[in-house]
Amino acid sequence: MQPTSASQFQAAASDGVPPLEEIRDRLYSYGLRQPGTLPHYTLSHLLIDSTGAVHIIDAGWDTDENWDRLLETLTALDRGISDVASVTVTHLHPDHLGLAARVRAASGATVAIHRIEQDGIRELSTPVRDEDSHAQLAEWGVPAERQPELAAAAQLRSRWPSFTADRLLEDGESLDIPGFDVRAVHTPGHTSGHLVFVDEEREVVFLGDLLLPNQFPGIGLGGSPDGNPIDHYLASLDTVSAWDSFEALPGHGYRFTGIAARCAETAAHHEKRTSEVAAVQHPDSTVWEIAGGLTWTAGWGALSGLPLLSALSQTALHLERARRLDSR
Ligand SMILES: [Zn+2]
Image (cartoon, rainbow, N blue to C red; front, side, top):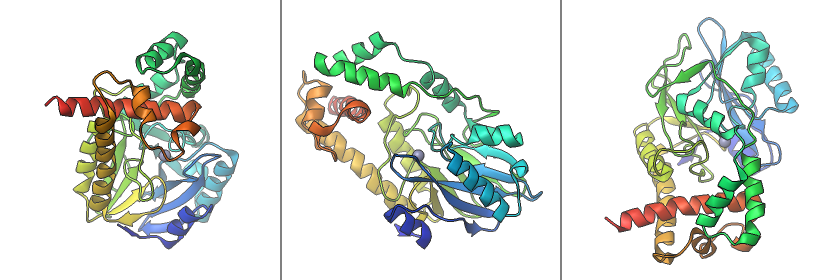
């Protein structure tokens, strides 16, 4: 894997945010800060079509700072907010979808997302019932005294703003951008309706959070998946490996070449996790016991609230997979 942007690479290694840069003819990218979370910025892409209109791929967090930065960036490109014709997002997370609502309100832009992500938004903006959370936590073997904290975290996670997109995308569809041929490819795993976008002419892939150069994306972080999202995720890595000769434009970090090698590293990371789970589990061990026997970056004892809930759900996915592979 080779970084292809010095300024993005430097920003990723510091607390900076990448400046506007031209990647190809009529294709630009810049960074928008994420408030209080890691990674510390999202890469947003601007495409200027043959009529002069602007199309955004991934919009960044909805903050006043980011809104001002978008307006300044459009000015730098001799455009204004009313020139924005569409916003297309790789997935439903607020660091990608966030600013889309404000852009649409100001410009009338069309917002596009995969059909499954629209269902995911509906699901995640519906408060979870406390008894459902407790039933899940009990099934995972979470001790009763830790359940209230995790049920509260689950509540927090379900407080998403509702949002209705204007266009629902399916795998293989082209975006409506005159002078560009950008195709949506369904790549589930990080979320169930995650999309990457391929521009064969410019030889770039907009990766969203499917594949990142400097971290391993989480899995199963959208609406309820149909099956185990680890399986979907590994299949999606296979799918994008086909564009190995293209430049990767990820949602965070820096652009790079060497997609197939990074896919292989990322797949190996998850395969290793499944093996670790397989090694510590017994037929009657619970998700809670298994998670406590694994290595966590923050340390198992230090995990609480949302990070702990996320650690348990990732462990449950690996456990299901480990047991299924073992029974073959
Ligand atoms: Zn993201």
